Amino acid sequence: MKWSDLPGRHSLFWKLACLLVAFCLLMIWLSWSWGRYMEQKNLFLSDEARSTLTRYASEAERAWQRAERDGVDSWLQSMELREAGWVGVISGNLQSLSSAPLNEEEVQHMTFLRGLDWPIHKQGRPWLRIPFPNDPSAGSLVIELPERFLPGKYRLFWRVVTNGVIPGLFTLLLCVGLYRLLVVPLNNLREQANAWRADQLNVRLSSGMTQRPDELGELARAFDSMSERLQSTVGLQQQLLRDLSHELRTPLSRLRVASESEQGLPQLRERIGREVDGMQRLVEDTLQLAWLDTDRTPLPEEAIQIQALWEMLTDNACYESGWPSLQLQCSVDSSCWVRGHLNTLAQALENILRNAIRHSPDGGIVRLGGQRDGDFWHLWLEDQGGGVAEVNLERIFSPFIRLDGSRPGDGGFGLGLSIARNAVQRQGGELWAENTRTGLRLNMRLLADIDDVSADAFASKPAPTGSSGVAPIFAQRQAL
View 1: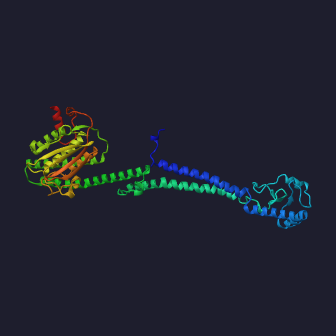
View 2: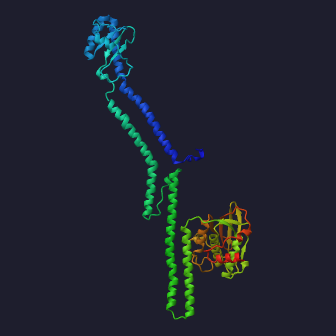
C-alpha cells in the first residue's frame, strides 16, 4: 500500500482512528493503574493495619527489654483483652520468649508466617511475623491477623465496579463520541432530505456542517449544492410555466379576435400563420431553455474554429435581417479554436448575434473580437444599441425579461440570452454583459483547444442539427 493511497489528513478515517486508539490506550491504562490500586486494596494490609501491628511489635520489644519473660507474660495478658486471636513473642530460632512454651499446633503455624508486606489471600486468618523494630534479631511478634484488618471486604463490589461499571462508562463515552462524530451529521442530512420531501427547498445545512474538512463536510456541501440546484430548477420551471402561460394568452386572444372578424381569407391565413409561428418559436425556446437547465449529461466535445462558425452564422443572419455582411465584422483570426459542443455553441452565438442585431440601429456595426487568456479564449460581441442600465446587466439573462424602453427595437420573447448563457455554461464557459461607450458587450470565456488542428479540419466536421437556422448553413457549407 502506497502513502498516496492513504486518506487525507482531514479525512474522517483519522478522526475515527484517533478516537479508537485513545479509547484502547485509556482502557489499557485503566486496567493497569486501577488493577494495581485494587490489588493494594484487596490483597495487602492497609496502612492502619501495618501501623497498629508495628506498634504491637514495639510494645512487645519494650516488654522484653524491661523484664524479659515476666515482661512478655504481662504484655501478653494485656493483649488478650485487646485482640481475640493468638498472640505470641518468639526468638530468632522460633522459641517462645514467654514463660509458656509453644505447642505442636503453634509450632506448625510458625512454618507459615507472613510478613507485613506479603499479599493476604482470603483463606482464613493468616499468622503474621513482625520483627522488633529496634533489634530484629532479638525477637519478633507473631499474631493471628485480627478480623478487622483482613483486606478485600468489598472485593465483589470492587470487582463489579472494575470489570463492569467503569468499562461500561468508558464504552458509553466512546459511543457518545461516535454519535457526535457520525450520527449527528447524518441526522442533519436526514432532516434536510425530509425538508426536501416537504417541498422546503430553501432549507440549508448549518455552517458547522458545510465547513467540516472531512468526508461528511464534502457530503454536506454536496447536499447544499444539490439543494440549490434543485431549488433553482424547480423555480425556473415554475417561472417558465407562469411566463409561458402569460405569453400564450396574447396570441391566443388575437387568434380568437381574428377568427371572429369579417376580414378576408388571405388576411386571416396570414394572421394565423404569423401567430402560430410565434407561438411555436416561443414553445421551442422555452423547451430548449428547460432542457439546458435540467439535462446535465456531458456533451461530446470537439475542436471548433470560431472564425468559420461566425461566417456561417452571419450568412444566415444577413439573410434574416437584411443587413449587409459589412456590418457584421469579425476581428478573430483563424487561430482561435475552442473546445465545445458544436450545435450548442452555435445556438448560443446565434442567439447573441440576433440579440445584437435586433437592438442595434440601422447602419450599426456588430463586431466579434477575442484574445487568448491562458487556457481559455475570451470572446466578446459588441453592438451599438446604447447599452442597458448597470442594474439590468444581470437581469437580461433571466427568462422572459424584456427591458422595454431601455434599448431601441422590439421582438423576441426574452429567452435568447437565457438559452445562450445556459448553453455556454454547459460547456464549462462563462457569459456576462457589460456596457461600452456605444452599446452592449457580451463576453464569453471558452476553453481553448490545445490540439494543433488546421482550419481545413473544420470543413470536414458533421453538420449540426437541432439549432434554429444553423444546420442548413452548415449543410450548405459542406456541400460547397
